[in-house]
Length: 256
Image (cartoon, rainbow, N blue to C red; front, side, top):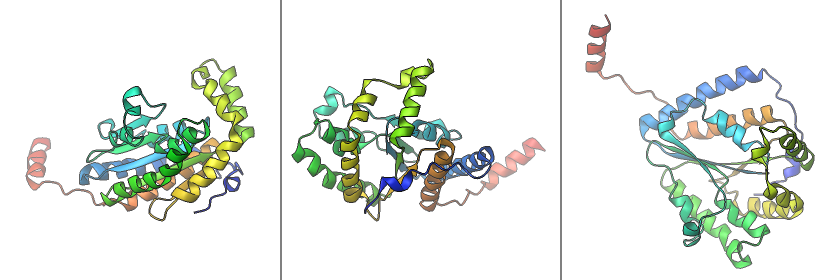
């Protein structure tokens, strides 16, 4: 599937009342999470995108009303020595959700065809083989009944630079930035080439890429959370459980 990132650069403001829309979405997501717990379902939500695109802010608001016992956020960085001793998908297989859980990946297995490709951490043979390996891995999860939501948050170079400057000037945000941000920035053209091929090779009918215009943070959050809610809700029964008659009887006697 062909995706042109330049189609996601308008940066339009959210047209409604952001606070009300966010609250309503989070209430919906809370019920969806309960449905996964009640029915024993599992799901994967995965984020890719530029540095400073706002992935963390979306994840923060996605999970705000969720029961922490039944979800896990996996921030993915460079693999450890133990992880390097296995195939590149091993560390993701060890983080797959159990029954009743939702796993959230802040960056993912797509590092093989993005950063590892661009920075030369994987050979050309390895990253070219990676497309088929990734598609097979995702098909395996879907076949096991685990829905997969793949979100890519896009921002322009101009907007990214604005956010980088903000991180330099705000001393409480400086921990968010490092040399990798500027190494990656310098190779934006190479990353765009890699992203274009990634979308073409891995955006499938069963597991499509969802691109979010991240140039306005509030609009991006609402768009991302709405899409995630739509996908997850379609894959789980939203029928609430029946109350055990004996529990109800005892409870009403106790409560009057």
